[in-house]
Image (cartoon, rainbow, N blue to C red; front, top):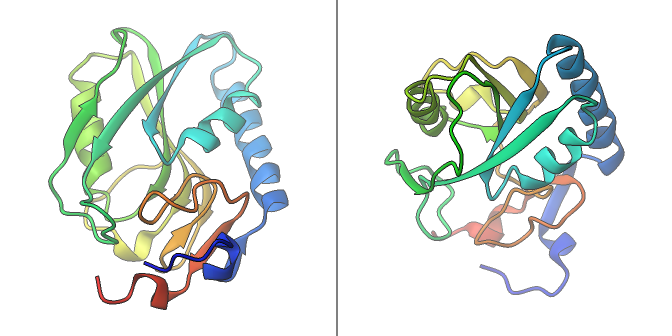
Length: 187
């Protein structure tokens, strides 16, 4: 992995600007607020990547809500490909039984991890369970996942920024960019 001090130097192309993301997150917040009007909502973020998205999204939803966090792993180290094996590293801190739950994801790629999570969360008996993702990469989908709220559909490129990482770096970029292949070549 390149050790450049300037994270932006490793970006080949800006796919989604900070402004485009903010506008779409506001739209999603309005749509979710309308769909859940008069109800209390529980947002479940999948750490670490979706944390910036959930933080911005929840500020756009003027409803009573609570948040919970899960951390799962399906990647190893700096890998750019999912291993297909899902481990729950941090589980929910409270019950979601009889709650309206919105699972907030940063990106849906193959769908394997999310498919596992949906089955796992349904086993906790929520009143409803829907999915909101910032990024959807359908070209790589191996499992059919019904996405209720989608920020952007993106091409099959390795992206970082706005929570997405490579080797735990680039999460703090305010945009979503395509990582130059030479940064992760030779994995």
